[in-house]
Amino acid sequence: MKTFDPATEGPVAFFKIFSSAVAPRPIAFVSTVASDGTKNLSPFSFFNFFSANPPVLVFSVSTPASGGEKDTLRNVRENGDCIVHIADRPLGDQLNLASAVYAPDIDEFEKAGLTPVPGDSVSAFRVAEAKVAMECRLRQVVSLGDQRASGNLVICDVVKLHVDESILFEDGASIDPRKFASLSRLGGEWYMETRPDSLFELPRPPSGDAIGVAGVLEAAPLTRRLSVAERAVLGTVNAVPSAHLVQDFAKRWHATNEMENSALAQGALLEFARSALSRYDTNDAWLAILSAEQLSN
Ligand SMILES: Cc1cc2nc3c(=O)[nH]c(=O)nc-3n(C[C@H](O)[C@H](O)[C@H](O)COP(=O)(O)O)c2cc1C
Image (cartoon, rainbow, N blue to C red; front, side, top):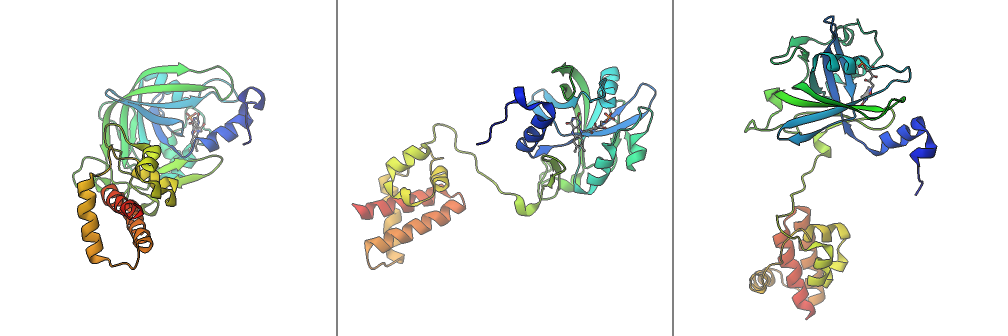
């Protein structure tokens, strides 16, 4: 392992490795208004939400090399309002354009070619083209230093969340990631878009104690023939199926799968288990594995 020590690396070098390690990061596309009414719009990838009740999101505005404060931080400190958008791939180039350094009196909606819509509950403007927008009020700014690249955490209460209906699941309760190519940032100039072919679901382990990888090996030594990732899926259960259920399964399985010898039957049962695991069907996988174990006895 190559080790980077922030104490000796220096902020620029450390930022390089740090921002490529903590990746991908969601991007807050933040709209604010200056005291003279100028509309400001800039992206910030030091961003996430940290509380659902109350709903609180945080983005961090770094202290620029020239010192002072970026316009977004100054504006939000002055009037407490901002709108945080989640941009998708089609907005990527305009978001990038909005990240250039502009004088405080430049309208960054105009620069980026985006349409401002007045907020419902805050003085900042919403980007009409963005599919997700959160109206926010400033709770607190926490400054983490006064040097170049020091973060200033802008902690905000979310007072309204707007979503384009076309990206919602049928039940309208949440965003379907297959319908929204949200943009995220990695190190350097690398970005990522959420794509249907890169998505997968991991069912959460049931509540209560999972048996874990060690418990899997104890219950079924044959699982040494599986990968550790497959054992990790098997380890999400609280308990293995009862001997009675295994017996029933084995009877049905042997009735439809005639094998010349028990070694072949074991191999076929393990393959069956593998296929069940690829669908996260832990019940069928365990029944097959424990049926295979019976053949060792
Ligand atoms: C995708 C992206 C993410 C960025 N993330 C941050 C960030 O998290 N913090 C930050 O201070 N600057 C970040 N920047 C740079 C700011 O967007 C840039 O400094 C901008 O000019 C600030 O504008 P303002 O002075 O109008 O607030 C990012 C730039 C891009 C393109």
